[in-house]
Length: 85
Ligand SMILES: [Zn+2]
Image (cartoon, rainbow, N blue to C red; front, side, top):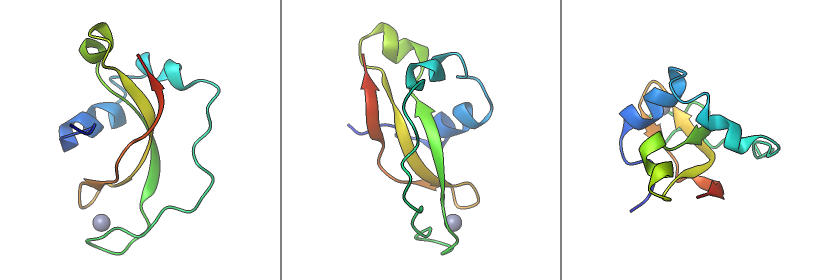
């Protein structure tokens, strides 16, 4: 199963609910390449630093990395995993 699976998972990151967990990404930079266009609205998507929820980390299934999102259409690309654990 790929991560994240639902937009609310991404929304939690956007809302700052996982700022503490995002520290796992300290030292890793967002990919420098240009985001691709959104498949729905064709506007450029944006890179987002993403981290899975606290429970996933307790279960050793945590994932941190970067993905591209379109907030308007609520679409996202597969996570580029930088940190697991
Ligand atoms: Zn879009």
